Length: 209
Image (cartoon, rainbow, N blue to C red; front, top):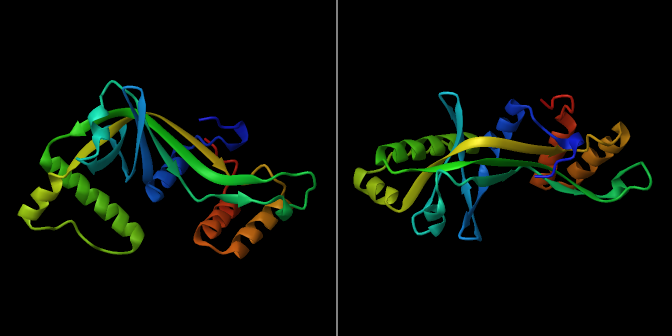
């Protein structure tokens, strides 16, 4: 991913907060020269010092058949983002832009065939997103139904070898321009704009890594 130095984010804790909160990613792989992509929720975990992304997809989705432990794949994550109009700036001679958070994770996929491990993964993933949803549903299903459900999916983990993150949050603008962007996004009022405004307001550009 091309990342201008002003927007490069290497502070791992800050990046992991994004993966923790905005974990719906795009898994991109290559199969005989064709690019394949699937949008799925994922879960980041460190196991004995090694970082992994865990996920699952429908067994009828042929993408998992292209997974190989010696072929790198990529997962793309996005945080809140939005169009920034030059009319919001006090400064003159400016152009439109787009503020956003983008994270690319690269690694090698490994299938998880053990149904016990698959069930643990589904339980952990559900618990994670139920927490952010403010609900308390538990993956506690009748055994026959649970076994049937797990037969319709393929679970995997991605052995992470690189994480690239771009946080473009108006940190290249002066304080007056930045304040006007925050105000305009809040006035726009949709959930993504309000979240983006909050990120711009609270982002510390000194915390880069």
